[in-house]
Image (cartoon, rainbow, N blue to C red; front, side, top):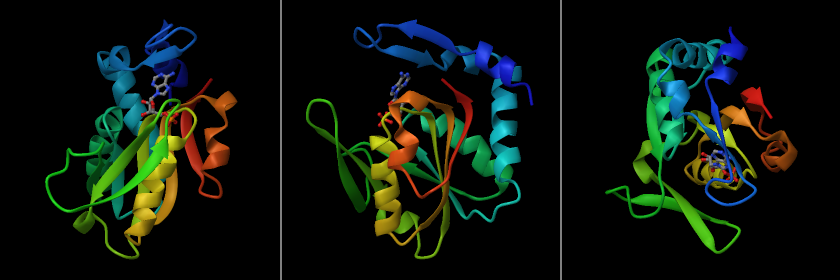
Length: 173
Ligand code: AMP
């Protein structure tokens, strides 16, 4: 696995979307076919020996990695979306933002009791989004095998918020 290739393909954009934020831009990785392929391979290698029924991808950049991984692992793919986007009956969980709240929704019939779930997103920052997604999965009776991120911003300690569920990541900052 060529971690440097993956890392070098991610663009850092300082002060986006506001001053002080170092935005990790994965659009440059997506334009590099080898780096994109290496990324999916890295996720696959980490989970190929686990029994996983469902991959839950978090809106929206999580979808990009979750969909090919679900096909490669041979499991179902479920969307975790922001409020008002999913058309059928949903279960939701709210979470705190710096200013106000947001929420994550999943279709009620997308996960069954006892399903083994892998939750995928591009980046773990404070962990609020991933934690809310995990709560919805648990409400629906799913068992979270692990969280998986392309990037973890370790200094924000999001992985501690997600404990005791394991957190896999390919790149750490
Ligand atoms: P959080 O809930 O704080 O863990 O934020 C995670 C979500 O926000 C993920 O879906 C990321 O795509 C996005 N995000 C947060 N911080 C960054 C960053 N520095 N660069 C790129 N995306 C970010």
